[in-house]
Length: 237
Image (cartoon, rainbow, N blue to C red; front, side, top):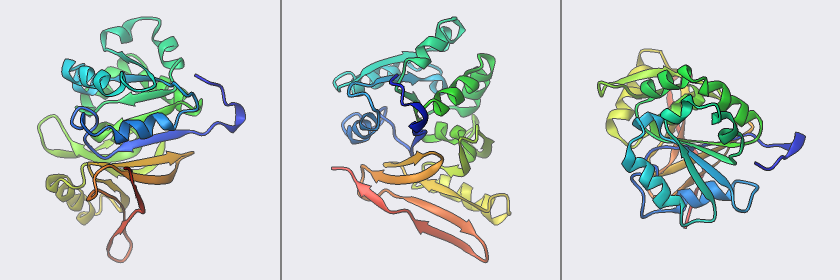
């Protein structure tokens, strides 16, 4: 990883849904992610824990990135047990957290102290990418599916303040968020559609880019009444 000293920018990139596993023919999101790194040929590491190291997801990662100007690698659960894990993470410009079962991912990561390694990477200026439900873990809280297929609020690392709801253009996700708003459990948050990518710099929303014309992101609030405000978007072409 290139050192950027005291001027380092802490970056988190949130995919509202479909990562490369569901968008292998639409590489715009992947290109955008790579362009944010300082290195012209960045090192990018895929952590597929949430999918329980699903082989298809890992293959799709390499299909998406191996033809681009980068150096892709990945970490499996079995490799987390090895002592060289620290050095692998430290060498990366971008750490890409794949979508899947967040509860399973959190349990595995706590066993191997991955949480602290991610925090250190973030504060050192390495780019952290969270796809779909897994992006919830980068916020204080988020609304997403649990193992049974229902919806719940999960706590995260708090690298970004507030509440995240990915897959907002999925009717079930939207309804789950509305239910929590109506009962007062959630007062404000950020909702992101599949096809939208929200880029945070130093904890603040920097921009929202979309790879699908009908996708967007929304700032949600409930002061006197429920408010849904569109975030300005840039269409990738």
